[in-house]
Image (cartoon, rainbow, N blue to C red):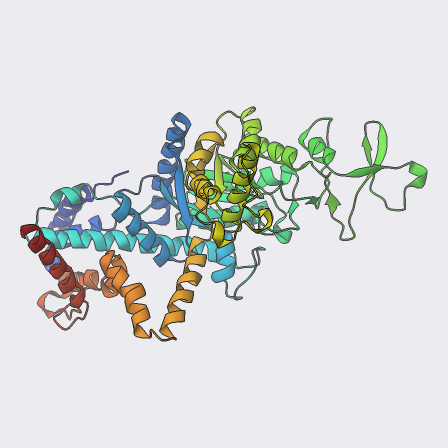
Length: 543
């Protein structure tokens, strides 16, 4: 989706000229062209502007996916504004457009990396304000990316380059963010208040899960406790009211069910009539038949099919669901959520298996035909092993001789160039395409990619830098790669806003401005390298 800052520029230019005329000589130092340029470089004034703009993008993308399942969307989780900024700059550089690319804000990463308590597990123990603060930070960095890129274009225009078309058709770095509100951090009023803060910071899509908020667990860990449907619907309503109050009419709610891996509930809802939601929820609770005379003092009893039963209750007071009921509960949770205001679904699964996901989604679509998923391509999965196991089973079913493979050791590097592993890697490569077409996955995301890439890159740099390679480890493994791959932050002063600030100082103070971008700025070494590279390329072409 394009935005047109040059039309904003012309409008702003006239506005400032009119203001100068209105306020007379006291505004003599204000240059309308400079002011209009600054206005054009900052299209989004508030987080609500961003939320409204990005919600419209998501709604458009959802409609396009409904028409053609190849139009799926993607995102990567970001735990800092700089990470999000560099991601979107790279998206524009490599793919020429931000279309269908979003951002994801993971509650797991907020807990692990952004809490004042220090690193925490994903159990809703971090400060709830950390989530909207990160959303605001991310959009501050993306707005700065816009300002820097447009400032560069305006500089080139002033130097006589014909870049007017690029300015007129500049595509913003601002994209939708799907933000994790965990289980809502309290009751429905607490959920509403936090949702408002997240939306005001710029979130157009809020993901909320059906776990008990004060017993919340990571979706890929054990011990998850789900809530009755009425409780979850109240929180869906709370998020919708927050969107409506703030004027974000297209706001998106992602309803996440953890029922596939959850075997416990904290509450037994009250059924008002046979077959209602509470009754359906209670039907999944594990129970044993008991005669009234054998019931213990203070036992909780239910009447089921004309008989008294005692729900299986653990020592901690939690109730147990029937074994094998998880998929049925997932389907009911999803259908109920979509029928009560959710726009998208999130199903946590034990492995990334397209057929298993499709099995659940097809059952949901039997009731709600346009049901769509946000799916976590999680680093909690061992992708290599999972897909090698899937292919092993396929090859076995095809009658292949599998004696060359040790089923219990398929991660071994000795198999990396085998037929099995090539087929497995191909399935991983097409997983998102296949999931979009066959399993209703509208949005693919990786929750924690930059958590892992940061650790990996520090591991590699540390090994060489503190070893025999010394400074060469940084130069060869980092800086030389940045230069050759044109990574934006190789000129880190510019990326932090130094050039932008110099231009602003000139606007404000004229020739008296003290600027950082003089001849003694070492960043010019990278400009020289870039120029020499261009010259060498031209010479090689001539030769």
